[in-house]
Amino acid sequence: MLRDCRPVDGVIDPQGRELWLRSVAQRPTGDDPVALYVVGAASSEAWLNGQKLGANGRPGASPAMETPGRYEAAFPIPQRMWRLADNVVVVRLSSFHGVVRLDGPIGGIMVAPYPWPSRTIPVAITFLMAGTLFAAAFGFGVIYSLRRTGSSLALAGLAGVAGLQAVFESLRALVPYAYPVHGLRLVGIWVLTAAFAVLLVSYVVSRFWPQARRPLIALAVAAVAATWLAPGFDLKTAAALLVGLALSTMAAAVGARRRLPGARLSLAYLGAFMAIGVLFPNWLVDLSYFLFAAGLVLPLLMAEVVRLGRDDQEREVALTRAAARPNCLTVASSRGVERVPLADIVAVVGADDYVELRLTNGRRLLHAARLDRLEQELSTSFLRVHRSVIANLAHVRGFERDGGRGRLLMDEGSPLPISRNRLPTVRDALDEPN
Image 1 (tube, rainbow, N blue to C red):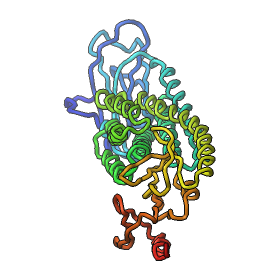
Image 2: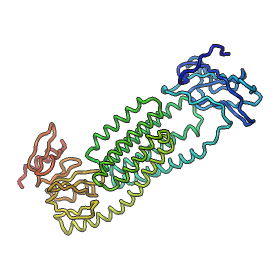
Image 3: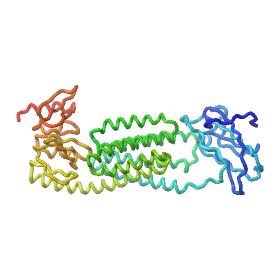
Image 4: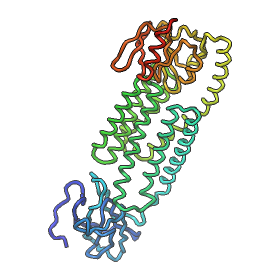
């Protein structure tokens, strides 16, 4: 059998063909049970010294002749089948039913102790991470239903896709699935990682660099999609996650430079995991990825819960003070609480859970409030001109067309965009006498 053989050069690839392999193995020392393991996207049969060890599915010369086998197969070897030296191992492989073409379809063919060492501990840790992440996703979902903030929705998505990926990663150890499923599993892992990377960028940019939200998210989507071209699914997955970490780290660095709350801690955390990904990419796509996701979302969940209570108290205080001084806005910023005269506010720009107050003399303040709530509290001289902008009409010096839209020219600062659907309202307000 197999008299005319050539040395294997490179990857063993039975995809789209029938392949016969022959090798010489030495008898393992000791009397412990061993098996021949064939791990890969292929059906297989195995022989030792001319005696058949078993079959995994049914290899064949065509798709009709092949019956798909499991991704992992173990063929126990009785001790009586071993020779003292030069044991001939023959393996027949075929792979006609793969869903996607793999760069490394065969993970390994080896003689090792039987049964394979238990994977209980890593699987248990992964499932613990999955349960924790699903709980965090539920918590952020509840917060989103109460506050309708984009950050809560992004964090719910982050936790949810990371939990799903933990389940996908554990599937190989839990279910002896057929080899065509392996391709679907790898595609699913990459898709979930890509979604996690884009959601991570969306959350971090919205929090620390809202002005660059759209271009950075668009860049993240394009760069993550490009990782599909990388060879091998481990590299695709690691590259997609590193893209998300790199862009998020850049946004956190901008927030740290602006001394925004939480930016420095986020920068350190993201930078540490990006370093792990660059130095130890295999760690990143395995257990450390789930530890990173859990370590990111759980403290944020606790902070969100605390902030919910704190914000409720601050709103009550702010409303009381606003009632006492209707011409001022009580601003809760990183420097404390201060009262800002409404006449000094040029514009209010939304930044997810915060708003940016653009004041006279070029000052800018971050205020822990939402744009929708402020629109109801501000005086009639303020008008919503865009979904993320409220303008003080007292500071408007002109209006100009910008394609099919318009822009307000302010007496200080850059022009403000006007949504197309708000354009008639803005023009009417500007035409009214003061």
